[in-house]
Amino acid sequence: MIRLTVLLFLLLVIECSSAFAQCTFTPTIIPAQPILCPNGSDTLWTQEYEAYQWYKNNNAIAGATNQYHVVGQNDMLKQFKVAATLAGCTENSASVLVDGWVFLLPYVIQSGDLGTFDPNTQSFILCPGDTMILEMGQPYIENVQWFDSGNPISGANNSIYYITSSGSYTACGAPAVCPDYLDCMLIPIEVTFSTTPAPVITQSNDTLFSTTAISYQWFLNSNIIPGATSKYYVPVISGIYQVSITNSFDCNLLSATYNYIATGSSYDNVPPFSFTIFPNPAKGLITIYISNALPEAFAVSVTDIFGKAVSSPLKSSGASNKIIFDIGKLTAGNYLVRISNSKQVVYEKLVVY
Image 1 (tube, one colour):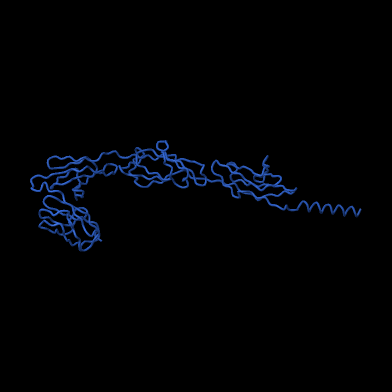
Image 2: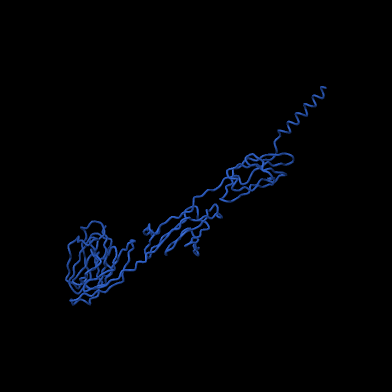
C-alpha cells in the first residue's frame, strides 16, 4: 500500500510538471501595429508551426486555423492573438490591436488672385489676366485628379492647380498612407472671369470721354495724370492718352492709346518726350536725363503721388537734356517728378530714402 501511494504521488508530480511546462517558442504577430485604411483590410501573420487558432477579444474565431488571418473594417479596435502548436506544445502570442486611419473630408486652400465673391451666384469673380491657385489640403496629395463641371481636366494631376478660365472646379485625391482610398470634394469652387470690355476713349470737341465705370484714372504718355479721375478729361497738350477703369468687380481695365492733338500751337507736331532719373531711389541730388532736348522753356518740379507740389519748380530756357535737381529736403517716400512745357507734361516715379 505504501509503494502504491508513492507511485501515485510520483505520477501526480509528473503530470503537474507537464501541465505547467512552457513551450520553447513564442509566436508573434506581424504586423505588430496594424492600421487599416478606410474600407481596407490587412493580413495578420505568425511564424510557421503545426497548428493554429486565432482569437478575437479572447474568443476563438471559428475556422481561423491558418498561419494567417485577414482583418477588415469590422475588426477595428479589436484585440487579436494566435495560439500556435508545435510538438504537442501550445503557446499564445501577445495580443495586437487592429487600428484604423480616419481622415477629414477633402478640402482645398485658395491663394493667388481671389477676386470678388458674388453671393448671388456663389462664385468668385476674377479679372482678365488673374490666376487663382487651388491646392489640395493634406493629406490628399496622392492620385490627384482635378475636374471642371464634373469632367476630368487632362494632365491636372498635381496637388496644385492654376485657374485661368471660368469653370466649376472640384478634385479627388488620396492620402499618402492610403493611396487606394480616393475621396472627393463635395462642394465645387465656382469661378467666373469678368467679361467687362476694356474702356474706349472718344473725343468730343476738346474733351476725351471714357466708357462708364466705377472709377477712372487718365494717363498721358504712359504716365499717371494726377487728379485726372473723372469720366472725362480735357487735355491741354498733345500726346498719347489712355484711361484705366475699375468695374463693379474691382477689375482694372486699360484702354487702347488715343493720340490727341491740341490745336492752336506751333508745337502740335512735336513728338512726346520722356526722361529718366539717376539715381533712383535717391537722396540729395538727382540727375534727370531727357530723351531729346526740348525746343522751348520747361519747368521741373516734384509732387506727391496725388499731384500736390512739394518743391519749388526749377525753370529752364530749353534746348537742354540734362538737369541736376536737389531733393535733399524731401522726406523718405514715393514722389513724382514733373516736367512740363506749353505742350507736354510728363511724370516719372521717384523714390526718396
